[in-house]
Image 1 (cartoon, rainbow, N blue to C red):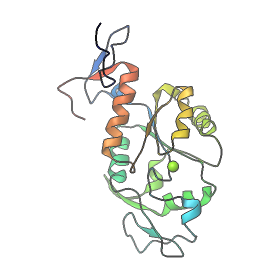
Image 2 (image 1 turned 135 degrees about the vertical axis):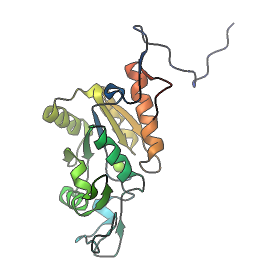
Image 3 (image 1 turned 90 degrees about the vertical axis):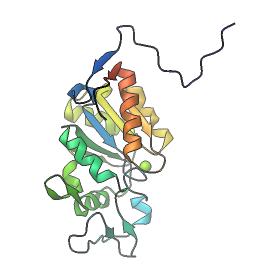
Length: 206
Ligand SMILES: [Mg+2]
C-alpha cells in the first residue's frame, strides 16, 4: 500500500496546467492586498491601548505617542512593503473592525514613513479604507463594490483566525503571527499563486 503523501507535498497541478510567469509579470501578483490593522500592521489594539490625542514629535518617522506616552509604530518592515506594493501598482486596502475608526484613521494620517520619493503619510498608501466594527465579510463586500476587483484577486493579511470566514467569498487569507513582514508577504503571494495555478519562473526574483 502506498504511503500517504505528506501534507507538505507540492500541490497537484490544476487541470489546465500551471501558468508559468516571470516574477515581474503584473498578473503574478493579486490586484489588491488588504491589511487588518491591530496586531497586523501595528502591535496593539488601537481602541483599548491608545488614549487620544496622538502626537508626533516633529517629522519623526514611524513613531507617535498618545496622551499616556504609549508608542504607536508600524511593524518595521511594513513601510518598505507598502512602498513595494505601490511600485507594483497593487491596490492597497485596510479592513479593520476597531471600535475607534476615527482614531485609526488619524494614526495612519499622522504616521510618517519613508517612501520612494521622500517622506509620506502612511495613509497615502491606502487606496481604500473600511474601518468599522462587524464581520469582515462586510468590509470585503464593500471593497469589492467600491473597486470592482474580484475576490479571487484579493490577498488578505490578518492576525485573527475567525476572519478566515472571508475565504468563503474567494479571498485568500494568511494568518499573521508576529506582525506583518516580508516573510508573511512571501507566504501570502505563494498561497495566492498556488490557488490561481501560477508559478514563477526561475529567472524571476521575488
Ligand atoms: Mg487584528
